[in-house]
Length: 170
Image 1 (tube, rainbow, N blue to C red):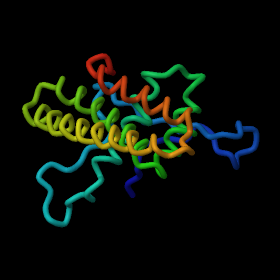
Image 2: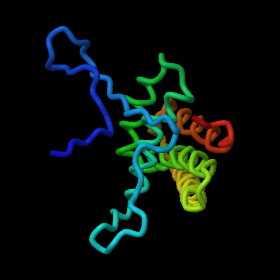
Image 3: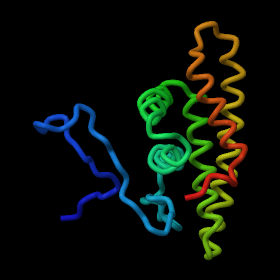
């Protein structure tokens, strides 16, 4: 029987004596590469969903990028507020995915194989597209009077990190 090992839970809410909130931690790769990848040259039965790359980038942000960029005391804001809101607000999701993609691209472009570098360039293009989508979404949302200032500032911070991408390395 094969088990998935992409994440582990360090505490369970149902376990007696454990803290109330369970902390999910990714498995560690010593080479610094992304934890999950899409199949190379997939058959028609293996083709991933159209937004599979977005989910990979979201997980890259959640498990790799976020802990590098933000102090531990603020991780709950980013994980519990920003990442949760991203599932309901398109421009927030696009901003998270853009930064996750840019981080993945940086990691892949630093590898030795041509295949990894090709994937890195593809991922960088997707990052720029998502960044552009997020910018348009923020612009459109500014006309709305019920925009959360905390969420808007978080997205602007994500934009700033996306633009200074060479700094983000494992």
